[in-house]
Image (tube, rainbow, N blue to C red; front, top):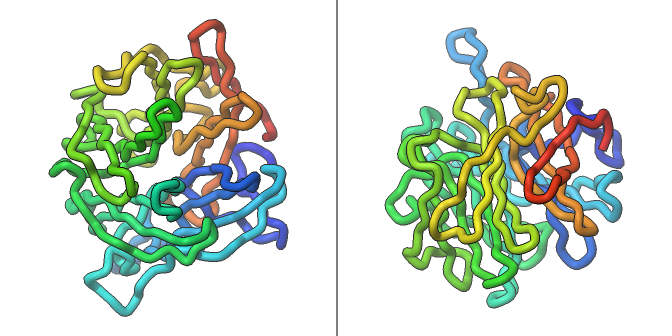
Length: 303
């Protein structure tokens, strides 16, 4: 698994799980992400930096290295133009969380029109981690627009949050989910007002909350910033670029999508976008190190 490149599953096919996440359910790892295995769209012969919605892929693994394709667990709906999963729309950054209260696996994703003016979040549920997931609703969380997003569950309180860029990416919002993880309590925290941060990834370590976000430069890579705080409710403090070494000011050519933990070590997932060849966008997984509370991310050739 060479960082910065496309990775293959156990059948030798390119893994299609962009803008996604890796998480563990019942001692097994699952990787969810956007399936972009299609040619980029064209209008009047001009190539666009988008593909039609195909759905959300799921891969499973016992060791984080050999991945088996479980299929498209939330497929596109090509016969229903009103569906948020219609091919001409946008389905991005899917994240899945397990709800102990209902026994359901809950997926949220950024749902949008092709011109990104709708800015909704959509929710789907399943009885198993490998689907099929059934679309439940599309919403504007707490009447705030939703673009790049992630899910985060606070291990201390059990509360979960949909964390999303809002105000046309000016502000990051933490919208608290209810006990079913399919709706909102109305509690909403604000972070980084006016800072224009997207691609959020959150985790908690030794009682402190950490985030990594990207600047808003379209498909072009930029400097990541990390933030830290003792509480989610009173805002996180932006600290610095955690990356060090060659390529650090462009996040090694990638963009943050998720952070997962394995054996008390944390790993940052990156997408290496190829806007005019999205199906061949690559991946990286990089270890996160700490010097006291300072976060450090260095490039490694392989995961």
